[in-house]
Image 1 (cartoon, rainbow, N blue to C red):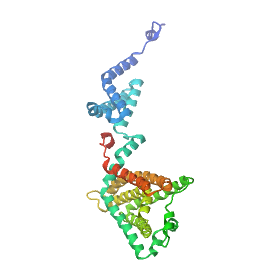
Image 2: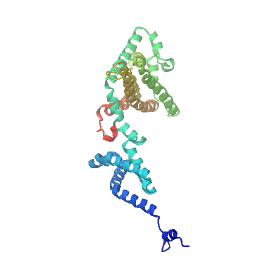
Image 3: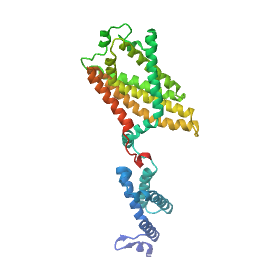
Length: 355
């Protein structure tokens, strides 16, 4: 007995597809041909976005992107329901996954985030809290003045404001030579790296504390800044009594223009949160605090960078560079850089940066 089924499957030594498989293949081919043009266009747009973001995309393609993505997603759903061929299904799954990541997924990797942070994101966050920076600056200046006046009235305040480890030979009654020697340079850089790490740890701790205390309506942040600046005011009073105000200012400016600026920003970021909680406006308190916290967090990431720079400046140039002029040059250059970056550098914000 012949087997017509098998004989119909074989022809010229090749395997022929059963009728149901041939029909499914025909449906899959027709389905793909009808939509392949849109898939290819979406694939080309996604490939351009993966290479260079939205800058490389034409306006027409950018407008068509959402519709093309929805079409591909719909095609994938149909392909799954009708059990189309595995090649089409795998292609659509990969395409929709890539397109979703570009349209709805995280807009940037770490490299993209870092680029946006350095090239505008940080400075935008700082300018957004300008009012809090003005308040914090006023409080810090007032704190320095209060420290000066307290010590000028009673020298006992000096020992309350200035820690003994920091004071060393810088105490009331010290001679001009002793005070001037405390500003002298080191003969070598040995051990300065570990000194820089210690300074970074201490300075970052102060800044993070000033920011964290902002959740108590910003009041502890202001008090912390007053205390730190009162200590500076007391030291300024001590050196001015021996006619060394200029030398001390130059010595402090090497790292102080970065360090004090960072403390100012951290206190302002904390105050920004506290002020948003105290005066949320039409928003809920938690919503206002969350928005302010996100903005303040961006500022604080930058402050940590500033503290790294300040620690390096304090450990190396301040200890190795001698002379009032060169020290003022370093400190003044750093201050000019920070002011220019935060308030003059305003790059155009690209659409992908605001995603």
